[in-house]
Length: 289
Image (cartoon, rainbow, N blue to C red; front, side, top):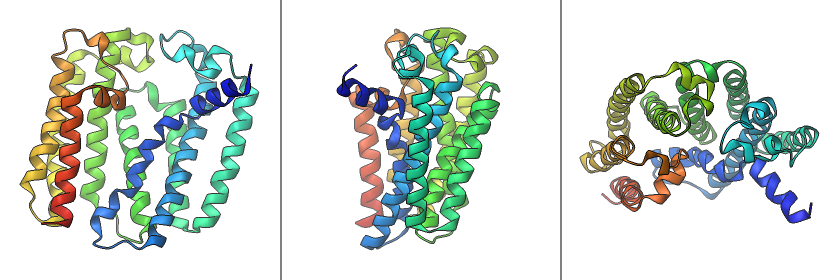
């Protein structure tokens, strides 16, 4: 095996492409009118710490689920599941990443942020070992993990964590993950995840309706506290969520849809356009209106 393949397997195993999730740590910038360069530096250090922490979790999750992953049509190609990377190598990589995270936490030197990292590790451990196979509870924990990323940004900036914003992130994440479960159910059945055996199409649909409505409500409450009532951003954010919901449920060939929501957004021009417009409208209403 050559070095290029080894590097590729390492990047695949630590899910470097999924570090984009940690960009949520920068979201609290919308709550302040001016950010100094040192705060941006601190947020970047926090971004790196959260990303590497998530990579550690991915590695141990892959080690634990390697036998199940070998039966999955896509996960069987992961480095550990396929045998291209040994368990010992996975543990060694996780150990190096843990040292890097500890160093970043020392550089940042914000005790509250360190508690967020510990909370993420605890929740991820709980999810991996128990909750991932419990319907509904698994969605709540996943939503909470995304909310912690946003909370970390507020703590770094020394701000109070807004409850409405956290609830918006939790319910929106639950909506996205429920859509992902629906696609997985249609494409792979309960082979994809054990928890899918406990869901039905009607049950997922009920969950989607409830969390979608709650997400929309808490989004409006959240942005109202940032810039006042901003109907324009409401329209575009709601359009994104409802179009995504309709895209999945009206798809005639759902097996062609990616069960990775980031890939799903990037592969659909209209959906990607709506997302970009929603983001642009929020920035415009926040900084230029």
